[in-house]
Length: 406
Ligand code: PLP
Image (cartoon, rainbow, N blue to C red; front, side, top):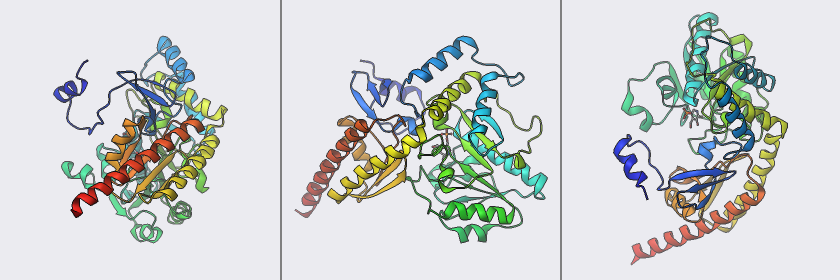
C-alpha cells in the first residue's frame, strides 16, 4: 500500500499535526479509510461538512454546475452568485454580500470594510477591539485580530490597530473604546479557543454599547454560522443584529467558499476597492446555494437545536458517571467535552481506534462538530464510544498514577 504519510512528509511543508489516518471516501456522517474501515466523522472538516459527506443534493448541484459553467470573472454577471447573495440577504439582517474563498478572507474583507467606514463616517477611526483567545484566521489582518502567540509570534510585526480585551467582559470593551475605535470584532462562541460560550447578556450588551458609541459590531460566524448552533446564525439566539458578519466553513457544505455580509449603513465600498478572482465563482456559489436552500427548506437549524440538546443531555449523563469529564460546553452541534486532565490527544487516538473522529481542540478538551444531518442513532453511537474512551483513559491515568507511586 502507498505510504501516503511518507510522501506527504517528503513533499509538503510540515505544518499539520495529522492523525495517522488517510481518508478516501465519505457518505453521510461516515468517512472511510483506505482499507474501507468506517469512522463516524464528528469533525466534519472542522464544522464544514454541514450536510454530511456526498449529500446527493450537493453532489448533484456541483456536478450540474461543473458541466455548465465552472468559472467566469467578476467582470461579468454570474447567476449563481446573484441568487446566493439574494438568498443570504433574504434570510438574514444584511443587505449586501461579498463572496471570497475562505474564513480568513471573509474576516480580512470585514476588517477592510470597517476601516473604510471609519474613513467616511468616523473621521478616519480605524482601531478594532478584539477578544483574548480569539481566532479569526491566518492572513495578516485576521492574524492580527487573532490572539495566541503560537499563531502570531513567527510573523511579527503584525498589522497595527487592534486592541485586545478579555472575552465576556463588557466593562473592558467600554473602557477600550476611544475616539479612533471603529468596531468590535467577536466570535459569538469562541470555537478554536475550546468552544467558549458567551454569557447570555454579553452580546446584547456589546450591541448596545456599539450603538451608544456609534461603532460597528462585526461578528465572525465562520465556525458558528450556517445552522451549526441551532439557528441559521448564532447571533439570532441572542436576539441581536451585527453590522457585518463573516461566514465560511459550513456555507459550502465542504466546498470552499467564504463571504462577508453587511448592513446598508456600512456598505461603503466604492468600485474596485475590494475584489477576488475566484470569489463568487459560479461553482462555489451553486454549491452554497444548494446547501442553504436545503437547510431552509428542511428546517435544519431547528433540527440541529433539538439534536444538540439531545447530545448535550447524553454527554451530561456521561459526565455524571465519570469524574474525568468535568464540563460540557457549547450550543447546537458545536460542543466540547472538558476533561479533568490534559489527555485530549490520547482520547482522539482511542476514539479513532473505536471508530469515531473527534478533535482535541485543547489539551484538556474534545470538540464535537458532526454534520448537521447526523441522526440520533449516530449521536448515540458516538456517545457510547466516547464513554468507552473515557473508561479507557481513566484506567490509563490510574495505572500511570500507581506506577508513579511505586
Ligand atoms: N474565523 C473563525 C471563527 C474560525 O474558526 C476560522 C477557522 O477555524 C477562521 C476564521 C479561518 O477560516 P479559514 O481557515 O477558512 O481561513
